[in-house]
Length: 496
Image (cartoon, rainbow, N blue to C red):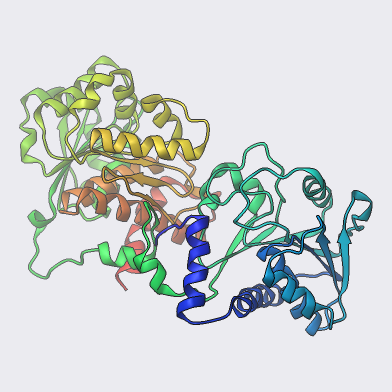
């Protein structure tokens, strides 16, 4: 799914109006109707709805919601932020219609006009929408601060007032919503961790915008969805054998970190690798072959004598440490292997300490840092958007794929595109989950998926397995091994 900018979404509205065709007021009616329906179905408990409106089309949505609630005999008060302008045509049309209903309409011209807000009110924020391009000030700023000061449930329409649609909103006043009802698709602003305190629980409401616009529109940003995953996933053919699905080499583990090697190797096997060899310190052989009998084992100490070219792909880094002998493992792989590899964890820290090795990465390789590892590699970022932009730059410069892990993990690709993952949950914030991802990525790359397909499908399966697991385990109790155990169910879910 393409992630569109605020300007592209505005043009999508226009495209729908012209090509459905539908009038702008009827489209507003449809959008507001979805919000009203959601409020009804949510069964929020309140005595009075207080709807705060600007004079743009976001405010017009608020006016239509007010009328629709009044038609259901729900007490409604509307508060319009008054600056002397008439407002948009659709706002004026719906204000005129509202006068025929039992709705109290108030105009806020000064802080003295701010209404009392009780805990039994429902506050609907329709002040400013996606068109906002500067921080709130003056009366708007005072009103947002006033609303936030109260503990009534707040529902924001499209996005919380004060939030920018296409970039993080830092140090600016923003409505702190409990729920945000956004239209048609997830907007870019909901992918930034800086914005999380403001948007609450985001609900995407399908308002029937014309699909033809998205098909023709361009965007470098994408959100993975089930449709993309089903196109990417390759079911096994009946006459396949273990050689069909590659021989993956996992180089992982060090004294006290055998668990990283075990989790990575299990993830690789569960993700469908035909053959897996784990290269670990020789002292870990007993643990490794007891915990993962399906895998073969090689000693890291013998890497100089091993022909790496016989492996379909290599995953390296989890738990190897950053000592000199670990750095030699990375150097040996980069000097003697020319196919794409997967590098994570300590492997990334070794690259950060030896920047000259970055130029030796095989084209199409995959790096999977968490944000701190990313900054060790490529420098600090002032915001998540800056991190995304830097990842795009580095991916194109080095011709590698860079997965930055977190909520909405994303992969920056050498072609300049960025894919955000839509699966996963906070239960994955536990030691070892990244090791499992490394194994999954290595397995998919070894099975013949392209590096881009590997990143998109690997992130999705990793998160989906965790999403399935927490339905019975809980986020708090989730451990990395559970992600491995539920990978089978994740594969079943995408193959239906």
